[in-house]
Image 1 (tube, helix red, strand yellow):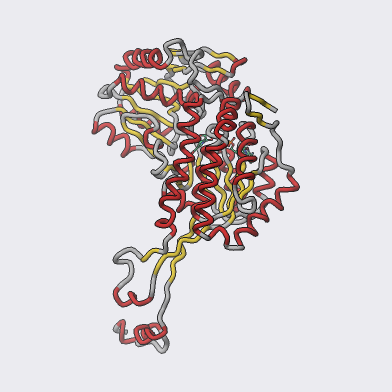
Image 2 (image 1 turned 90 degrees about the vertical axis):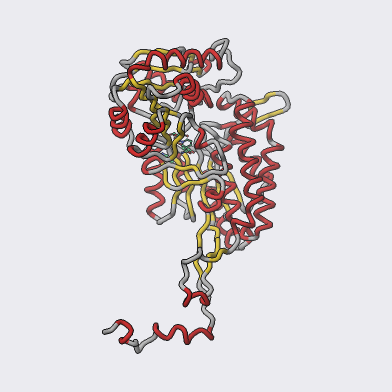
Length: 474
Ligand code: NAD
């Protein structure tokens, strides 16, 4: 167990694999009772989740500090308050989202207007939510808010790489929420495999593209729909028409939040050759502003999640043929990596070959915007995010010539910073979107209804045999 002050977090314990079929069948059975379709039940569960996050605040903050050295400020901003706001948003809009809807104007021709066409919003059923380690609270509970809002029951599977968060969430969800509606399964590959051997009505997976493919393949065997929220090698473009000081500061921000362990964070910056030295100078200035006593001494900067990921990032830096132009300090005993920029000149460089998912990134000098676009498209055709710092025309050209899940102009992260706006990837960075109303839609089936009055049969004469062939001039 791990104790800080009054908070004690139990030792990580995986759920016994042989219990998993019963856990899954319990939430499936609960769904079949229709209990979760009741709007008041959903509202109660959302309120319970809100208060669970509030009441377990000390435990969650301690766990986030223990697992990722995530500061209380960052943890509140991007994890706890985020989820609570999601709960409030869903509670506030639930009635509106769940209401049966008429067909959009113009969809039903006048002659069919009596046939009662409408759209019912139906929960998909019992769903499985699998989370990654970087936002161990938010990236599990924000999808859960969508599932509850839609009227689904759910099993959630936290990442085993953030064991303290996983244990707190298990206790929190199982003590506070309807235990027949929701369960937490803890564990790694064997437990996830056991979960994937069960039949779900949807699997919501956030994590790496590699594991996403394993999940999608397994789900395909039973034609189970999946939402995949994956990663990628996100490019940033900086032309000589950019506000270079701002570009440097905002891109450094993109690599310091959660120590760059963010799916949206830029992997490399394609910078116009002429302004590379100035851009680097501004990066150093921004670094000084953010970390007046150096990054290591900052109470704000998170650490790398574990030794394996530390070694992976270290190897990227060891193997690079590029030049470190900012940062470069590593301390394994603290799993500390300094925000680091490396000047590279080839897409074959170790810094360009994989998603960094850490506080390190490369700067790649380019001659022209066309060259920058060609490089970005060759490194990764469909990344999760893209950042453009150029003139209006250049930014438009960048957007027109590339594909990405989302994009910010003159900024990092901004397009993904609102939990009321849909978020998702494209191509191999993700399938489907969530957040805001999209979270409700993600777990909802729109069931189209027609209700034909018996008395209206005279209007339907044309559909019955014998056909009136004259109708088509035959
Ligand atoms: P991961 O894919 O290693 O793990 C995600 C989940 O899958 C964990 O719960 C893990 O236990 C499980 N898992 C791991 N290997 C498995 C296997 N072989 N079979 C079945 N299940 C397995 O991801 P991670 O390292 O925790 O997270 C980092 C990745 O997630 C990055 O690629 C990042 O870009 C991506 N990510 C995407 C988003 C998004 O919203 N699009 C958000 C955060 C992270």
